[in-house]
Amino acid sequence: MFREEQDFRRFLFELMRVVREYDWRCYAYCLMTNHYHLTLQTIEPNLSVGIRTLHTRYSIYFRNKYPYTGNLFEKRYDASSVHD
Image (cartoon, rainbow, N blue to C red; front, side):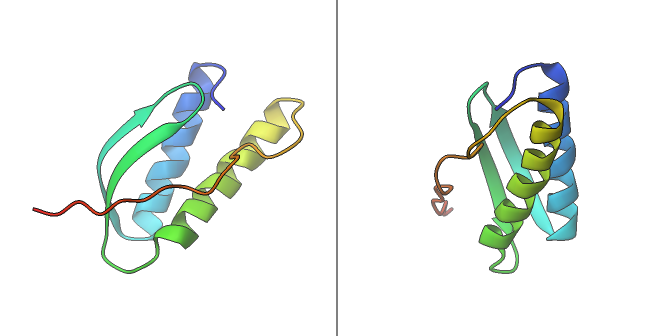
């Protein structure tokens, strides 16, 4: 998913675009070479469409850069609620 430093930076760029577009709050993120974790707050119930947008944008970047076939994101994201 992330092969070099530029890939991490591009994912963060796309993440911040989505955060602004969907009016989310991003409290934390952790990017690893094969997956990522986010702590987000969504005002509207738009998490699934926003994550789909993020994955689509990053997948287009990745496929243009590397010879890759198949699904870059193998399974649906997992979400959990965090309460005070």
